Image 1: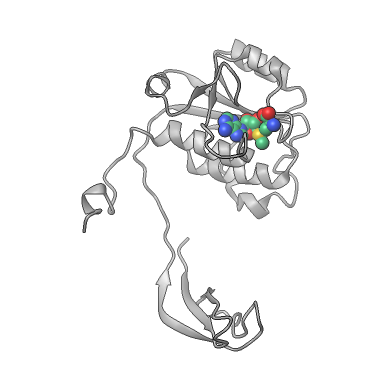
Image 2: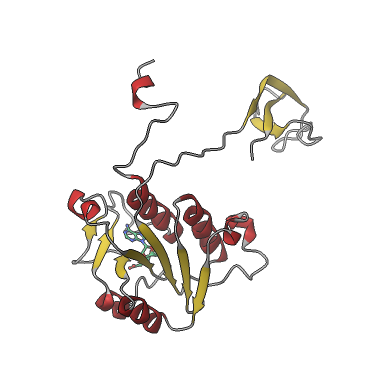
Length: 226
Ligand SMILES: C[S@@+](CC[C@H](N)C(=O)[O-])C[C@H]1O[C@@H](n2cnc3c(N)ncnc32)[C@H](O)[C@@H]1O
């Protein structure tokens, strides 16, 4: 839901913090950094609600094996909602939306995306595969191909793709990889060998859902030079 915000600026010139405050809120009269008085600057603005619907019809499910962080799982639910993920499988000790603190990062998305809990990820993955699902492990390794590979994107359909993500430290269980159709990775250019699991989930789901499916948006590429 859209809301209205306005910027405030700290009167202390050596601080000069500029920050947004929701219109009508009593907060922000004092600078949150240095405690000096602040004043409104510039006009109020509305936040954006993005409702773009141009997308591939690929069926995506997400499978999380032994993810320990509540924040990561909450963030996965929020991205799953945005990317039109059909189902989230929560395996091993992965926390579920029944945890009262998950909504801090999922912000209600956990109510919009169906989920199930499975104590044993390997048994669950085998059952999904036997039911015809295509398991795509998301991880590195020799077998991995880039999620941006055009041939991979061309193979998104048909069927039910289940994206399998592993533990924050130990990665994906090799027994899951042995059951998978393929392994896909996000290329890494820096000093780190992997991304945060919820970030990786968001990128891969969005690539599969939206790459090659761009529709006309208000700010379409034609307007970029304007
Ligand atoms: C922090 S990573 C785990 C790193 C772990 N040291 C390993 O060797 O896999 C947690 C999970 O996020 C996903 N992930 C993170 N970065 C990725 C990348 N660049 N490509 C594919 N998957 C990635 C994988 O599912 C991985 O199991």
